[in-house]
Length: 224
Image (tube, rainbow, N blue to C red; front, side, top):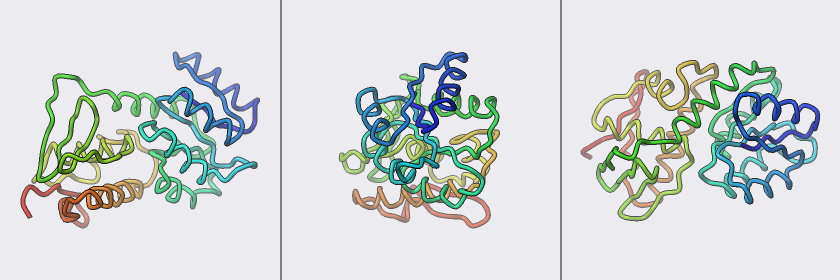
């Protein structure tokens, strides 16, 4: 795990708190150091403070997503920076926490994210249309070409494809893909659906595969 926090005291305290709960975490206090450590260690998860004084947090998020495409990125933001959340999610973040946050809430989010990165090997792949999901490997293919998906994008796509042809409510998706104790707005779901449609379409799949049912949720269509 990588903690990106410009204040070395706060960052060290967070790293120490995480270590006390069994997590191995490293600290980066600048954007360049964060990218360097992410490239060298490929952490399972990055905690990224958006309020860095030396670099734009959203731009850094985008750089980290490019450097470690399969790492979970959780951004930390102050209440006055809430407008940045949607931008950060669109830049590659998977989740966010609003400061001040409780350590118990942070730990619950980390457990949920890291747990969902693991899929039991006995699960088979699933296919709909041009799409095939390799669940144990957490990889998606359209017509044989791999689609680069972020961890939460894969989780969301898998949740829809496993129940292809059925309506999956917004509440079900938020609970399954994010957390049963999700505290934030559901706008993050819409951002991720938009990203999925774009990426699948770029690889040749029909954008109508993921249909929106207003006021209810989404459905992955088996027939078009």
